[in-house]
Amino acid sequence: MGENRKIILVERPRYRMPTHNCFKLERGPIPEPGEEEFLVRTLWLGLDPYLHGRMKRVSPQAEPVAIGDVMVGATVGRVEQSNHPAYEPGELVVGFWGWQDYAISNGSRILKLKTQLEQEHPSYALGALSRLTGLVAYISIMEISKPRAGETVVIGAATGGLGQIAGQLAKLQGTRAVGIAGSQKKCDFAVDELGYDACVCYKDDDFADQLKNACPEGVDVYVQTIGGDDLDAVMPLLNLYARMPVLGVIAMWSAADLPTGPDRTMLFLNQVMTKRLRVEGVVGNDYFQSHFGVFQREMATWIRNGDIKIVEHVVPDLEDAPMALQGMFQSADEHLGKLVVHVGD
Ligand SMILES: NC(=O)c1ccc[n+]([C@@H]2O[C@H](COP(=O)([O-])OP(=O)(O)OC[C@H]3O[C@@H](n4cnc5c(N)ncnc54)[C@H](OP(=O)(O)O)[C@@H]3O)[C@@H](O)[C@H]2O)c1
Image 1 (tube, rainbow, N blue to C red):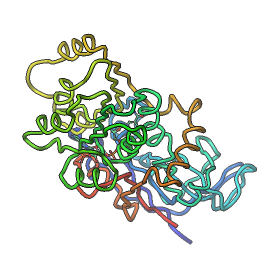
Image 2 (cartoon, rainbow, N blue to C red; image 1 turned 90 degrees about the vertical axis):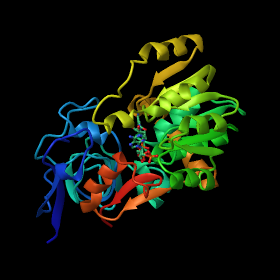
Image 3 (cartoon, protein in one colour; image 1 turned 30 degrees about the horizontal axis):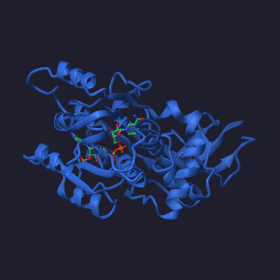
């Protein structure tokens, strides 16, 4: 007789930051599958910035999580018991059943892990080979930015789950890849382990000067994930016809207030016009039908060939997930690569 631990959302973030206080742990019995249902054992839970939106009253992507409900999140698990004709015990699946040890599913929003690489590394289905992380990096570089050899590509949150892949993809295209990250440790990791040509810490007083020095030929692609002071530093460096896929604004999500000072929207629009910039919002789900299959095949090949290295920061237990999510919005220094929680075996 095992138990099922669940992390419940008990409070919306008081400030913008999602803190660990918003959650509580509950324990209960392992549920039993009904007709045409199966029981899944969670192995891995992915932590992603969009979860912040799901904790608020209004979520830009989907219904917010109700107070008292299990926190949502992308999960990988193993079918333990099945009354469903399409699922066999032992199969590995990926879905969104959230922050709990076990869940019952009728197969809705569940995919089986298809690639051999996912069978060997199930957590990659939440990061490198996922629609939420790997696919977005792939689309941003390969479809939207299409950088040419010799161009300069700057990537925000350079050492995170998405940034590590975007940076290495940019290098595979023969570009100069320049990262932006939250500490010297992360910048060293970006250059030494991920192969960036340079990386600049946005918290340094002379960040804008450092970035300018790191991009002597200007910037042709800016993979926008931060949306804070980085934008002021990058905008003057952008070259004619530069591309800017906009993936996120995590600086805004973790700030208590909007930035002070004069409104710079008109300056931004003027730059867009005079430099003929291509600024395009990207949401991974839009590309699922059209690109997921080819993306997974190509990414698996790059990883197997050693062209792309995947780093994960593994949080050891489900009960540590609230603190780890908070750390994601506090630029925790120890978070290098994709943030995943090891829930069970
Ligand atoms: N549009 C889409 O479909 C999509 C899909 C996936 C991800 N994204 C976006 O891509 C970005 C990275 O996502 P990820 O999943 O790979 O997460 P991640 O990079 O692994 O983690 C988020 C990172 O953001 C940085 N950060 C946090 N607060 C910050 C602040 N105030 N200012 C600057 N940087 C801050 C931190 O790195 P540092 O320590 O380096 O600051 C943190 O490690 C996010 O903006 C996310 O929303 C978009």
